[in-house]
Image (cartoon, rainbow, N blue to C red; front, top):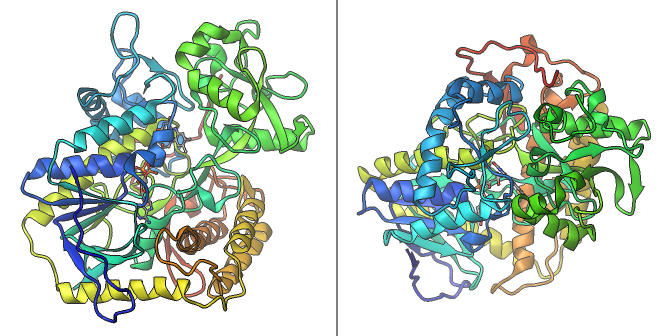
Length: 602
Ligand SMILES: Cc1cc2nc3c(=O)[nH]c(=O)nc-3n(C[C@H](O)[C@H](O)[C@H](O)COP(=O)(O)OP(=O)(O)OC[C@H]3O[C@@H](n4cnc5c(N)ncnc54)[C@H](O)[C@@H]3O)c2cc1C
């Protein structure tokens, strides 16, 4: 792999079309999905020229932060059928069953392939790949590399892409807009952070792999770069965002920072207790502790290993009962792993210990860890089919920014990393095949579109301090509105207030002011561009949630507390309109697993 060679910087004040770089496939995003797609595309034909555009150096993508592991059925007591059923029931029957079936069946080969590319899976004493339990998975099937799985996964993919000279990188380039000619997506307009220059990075097919958008909420495990940019790129080009109302809260984030304490801590036997020392999950139909004196007993873990939506909701109900503790950063409960012992903690959960020590001042070997629910993942995203293709010809999407959908109303922990590989590979393969047999569209017309993107950027930096709105104010008001109105529990009233606020903020953003009028490394400009994207993502979440008058998975409406299969067993589709999105629906694909109640524990 080589860094893309660019033509010399040019004067942005000159009025002419921006320059372009021509490739065959353009991938936006250098995380797990983007790099897997790049390898797949390179494998289709070594002659193809592949561009990977990333706003950060690829190893800084959020995939690197994943801790717990990735799911694939390989053990003798497991089967594809079990993994499929767990995923579908975890999704509260909103996942497309053909997509889930394909995902589960392709998962083991992808994980074995990853080992061949260098991923050091943790092993059992007999040398076989070890698996650990994870929430909502009724059988242990989560492969892991200690509790630094994402780091090893991303490294393995990154070093593998370096074997392909045909993969060109645009590190620290920010994709601004999709470029479309004759109804086909043919590239992106992108801003180089170093120079402030905008170029048209053209390709015969484009894959968006830009990850999630948890930053639209104030308290999240998501890295600062997770601002939903790629979702917005597609949304602005007329592609629907699907099932955006489904936002996953992870039950165990560190108060204050939102840093994740991985589910692996509960998978290894950690327990959740309230201020009275009670394992309160036994009161929420998630299973009962069979023998409280032996928290390591496998059957004794069912409740802590319930799905994330149920555990996060249980926290709020405990809070309402006054059973939680109060600290500097709000209410919390305790995650207790002390009984696992220092040896196990250091071998299987070393990162948990490191994070708790560094960011909470707590040594989990001797003290319980304070935790509370934290926004973690977006089940929704760019509407794609089972091959990762979108409704815009030549545009694909994969990874957290996409909604295939295998996660439905609630993702099971450890399915996401696997999803990056399975659907990243499919999208990379198909995009490359399409690109191989075709010509690029009208380059002049595409460059003209990139020039319009450049004008937008220049408009933001050169408003001569005339704007009256601050980026930080709008962002803070947006995240507060999302948390108060579209959080774990929602109502018509709370959602209406949030939607109203978001329309107001969208309008105020037009008047935003930047202090830094330079072009080189203008981080304030990037913050403004990201906020612009987040306002769109936030609207799609809140308006989709307002329209869905039922409770399903992570979407809990206290005014409509039941799941309503007659009315809402369907995907929501948010289409961008001037002020607020238009919401439509499309059917869920049900093949062999008819809707049923979600039952956990005994
Ligand atoms: C703390 C944490 C722990 C997790 N643990 C697990 C786990 O154990 N198991 C599991 O299955 N899942 C886990 N997840 C979820 C999982 O890690 C993510 O869903 C997944 O890594 C997302 O990968 P991705 O390739 O889609 O995007 P990312 O890895 O987020 O990469 C996005 C890429 O897009 C680029 N990008 C974004 N916007 C732009 C733009 N405008 N222009 C150019 N480039 C852009 C970024 O630079 C980056 O390279 C965890 C998530 C978090 C936050």
